[in-house]
Length: 137
View (cartoon, helix red, strand yellow):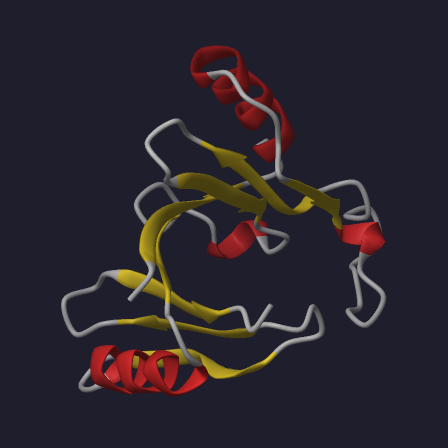
């Protein structure tokens, strides 16, 4: 496994929060994408300016990442933090995804995504939310 990073979800305040975190931790965003920037994903009306993905590298080597949750009805404090694992291979990612999903809830299958990486989301049997990723680039 390459690295584990925190991934935060916000109810429409990701840009404000990450500008604050940038002022606290310093550095520059390594990724900043709005919902409207995504080509192959339907975006609900009024959600176009929300954040699809933002990443702020930290001096420790970790990356603080986040997005806005477009479904405000599912957002609540407590389910807005994920542990994001970055695997070293597609196969390792699948193995980690399958092991973590056992007796849990596989919410988004581990599969190749429109941005070119492999990604899947799940909640393990202890209620912890995980994002499993592999970037072949």
